[in-house]
Image (cartoon, rainbow, N blue to C red; front, side):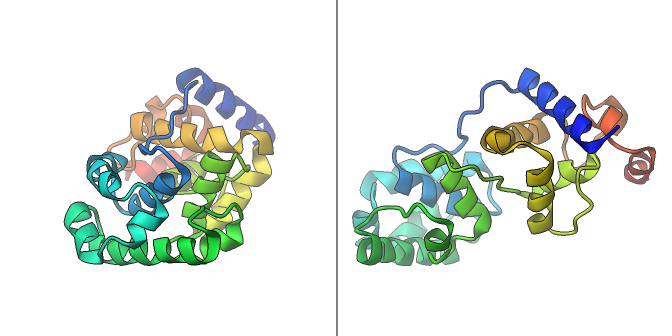
Length: 215
């Protein structure tokens, strides 16, 4: 099967299984989305959603977050992975937004990636979800699926992103990013997964791949 044909069939299955793609991180504005995505690195979305209400209650925007002490931020998000570093980044990032962008989240990759703690993946999520700019943020879930489905042989998420952007139509990237994450969590976990029983891996994965993961 050609990669283009495989991609079309994958999109059809994902649309059938996950027609709705709500943003899994709770937020009320672009700034809160940026902070939530930043915090989600090496942490589950559920954990982020548990701590952000208290944080956003005292600092719902960049100006108020900039005026919140790092120690206070840390006290609220302590249960999140890498909390000390994230607390410092959140405070510094907020001060930069106020100083350079009048407290508004910028709408370019370059400006977002200048902010502390904001890498390409975080910027991609914000650009897609906040500003509807086609982007394909690749996390460990999507990296795993791309390899299992034979859509990418990349060793890193940057190349996987390029491969997926090449095989899937640009207008589908934003929704597909979330559909693949939902599918990975619900149907295609990293461990204890029988590729032969998976609604996509069963036909998309090569015999070699299935054998490798059985061993």
